[in-house]
Amino acid sequence: MTATHSIPSTVLVAIDISKHRQEVLVAVLGKVRRRRMTITNTLEDSRRLARSKSSKMKDSHTRASN
Image (cartoon, rainbow, N blue to C red):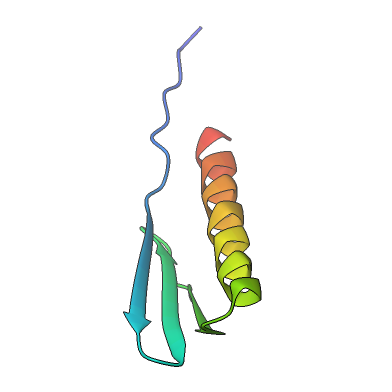
């Protein structure tokens, strides 16, 4: 039987910070599509960004393992 080793995808996050809002670009290396978000300087939006990054990382890990 052949052993399979996979390398997890790299997730890149670029954040343009301004006084009232942040522009966020999330990309997975090797993928064409990118996700763009605009978040305000609120705790709720910061948590939304953190959840989004966590789900992207889980998705890329799951795809790399399969």
